[in-house]
Length: 405
Image (cartoon, rainbow, N blue to C red):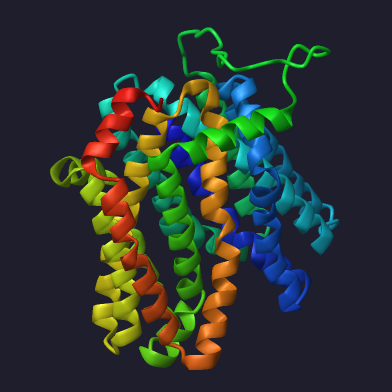
């Protein structure tokens, strides 16, 4: 699984840069180019809950491999369209949508599959940390510059690499051997009389009810949504802050982003040790403090060195948050509900992000470029209070011991 994630992330990073470059070679309209990013995120808003129900209904390993195969075929389709001179902006939009839908299903299935691969629950944090580190290295470090370099050589090459990476990832996932488990059926399940299975809407509703009745995960989902709203609101203005306040060149801005990525990789590698040393509850509190503190520092400082250091620390603690919370969901949520509950959790966190960009822009327009960083960072820091009260080490231990009951 780790090798599959590493290979796939490398290909993703290459095409992540190559796709907008290809679009820019077809049109100079910024609305069309920017719309590609929207097209790739729409599936999270309209399909996430349904994807969770699908994952709970079917074999998670097969779903993950199938989604890799679909993404590989779609990506190779871009290659063929480039060679045949068929590539147009609408085709790129369709590609982004298809890959986005497959990514939603793949991500949910992969997170649900990991506890079956990692037999010891105590090692889930380490496994999630290494998985996340591989994704950061591929998608942020190696893949994007590789994609730019290969695109300059030939427009189709980055997409060939990405397509091959998807096929290789699917092949590796299919080699994973899992002991067969009988399907679990909840006690309160009442299938439709005609089909013998409840409607998808009923299954989705069951997952939503479970999440909102679970005080710990409900709190973390709400806090994640607020955190992502604030992070997106400030992060959308980061390039302007770097240029106008910190007086950084484009290369300097790249160094800032690289510092955050370095911190994220380190957090993935040692995040389980951090969690064991401080405790999971305290780790989450510290993550909120440093994530929000990063933005406050960026809003107050004029020093590029201080800004780079803040980005690196926040990258480290942000990954620590992910390592703890993903592992918690894998340990707490019942297997037969994992896809639905996990998709609801992730939908709430990701669904707040588009709002953040609007909020950050409005604050900056009214009060100045650095003010959104201070205000939104302060909101994230304030989350340490509900996190500390409800997601304490004791509460987490009790939730794990009860198996989410």
